[in-house]
Length: 588
Image (cartoon, rainbow, N blue to C red):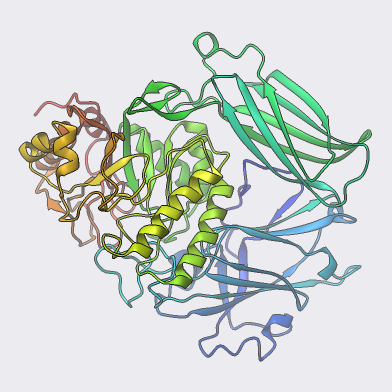
């Protein structure tokens, strides 16, 4: 038996003590003919012929299978045993992510269906469980659509072998599966909206289960172990909102704002009470920070802030989309900071919540980006809109998340420059995102062919220093360029003074491992790599108009060797060298 992978708590922003991790060895089977339901596999009575290590997709090495071929219908089966403390409670079953369509049965009873490969879902399975000591059967069916180019998939390739900018597919369970026990009435979710100007935090809470008179929610807030605020209010409906003023809150005196340089977090304890009886207790946290655009300047906590991001694909050589361990997740954050970056753009992937947790804790800005489709269709619009809303809801509370990027480089809307429907879709995603979250900037289409957008983001893989210096010497030069041969703004949506950022650039190929691959330009040795890196970063640091950048990319990925680190996270240059370049201190 392999030790359980990914045993850490999977939802650190909404934590309960009573839970069970279901990762580990499950029965597994391919269903290439699509006959599983007809044969009754969902009833849990039929053993499956293989074994897989959850939460790793069968395409990955850590799954124990490592089969990169097309298998678009897969099944999972395992027994469920409930510990004694779960007795008399409502049992909720959680899935971090299943790609793409998931159906879940407990003892042959359908308890959940979910569409979308990157977002979580859960189900109350209490009514489907056996009474007494009889064992329960949990069965999951996952259906993928690997060759459908209108499917929101991110970097997963629809052809047999990885190529160009596309990588190995992910099918089925690829994030943690777990259970928790709750009371019949419990806290469903909370939403934090900090306001550093008013020194308050708005807390919205949702209660699930039957409501009755006498219910109260107690909120206790502390900072570094010291109580700073406490409030108790009556629960009159399923949804309540409350603004709490933070005592002695003063950033200049106490340094309590959240930033990459000072990742300060407030701890919160929620207690749902029925009179004196505690029905539910949940631990959470939030950060007091503000991201805004003031007079054309991108600001963090009311001060202009230059964003130095790195493009992070979130792939691993042994786990593919699934990080192999919590330590590996934390190390990616640490390496990013040690190289002098203050943020990451998670590219074409809704990242594991543990990654955002470590960014919150250690201090790293994150641009939340969707996994896009490649082509446009009405079915794509339906699928994408639903999953994007779920993504925003999942990650709203993380102080590290500062920008939303629903679309990238016209993926899913390839004819946006001339197709009015695709323009309206990009517009809809921009306005939908702002309607769900008024606290963060939104990018309509990162890279080029933008419609309404809060930031004017340019992708530019030019490698010659003198060209970059001229192009980004003024805002007029920058917005009139077309570095990828694409217009930066769709006709009718001219540049209106938004902050200008270069959000993909560099991509310098440098082979420092056994991996063969490509990049946008090439380096021959360490000295050449450092000089080339400085040649693309320095013009942006010295620009009179650029307010941030995102270097491509953090690591090599499969056939791409344009990372600052190799695929197994070994630095290609000393981390301090990269830091000095990012800080404008490097001398040739």
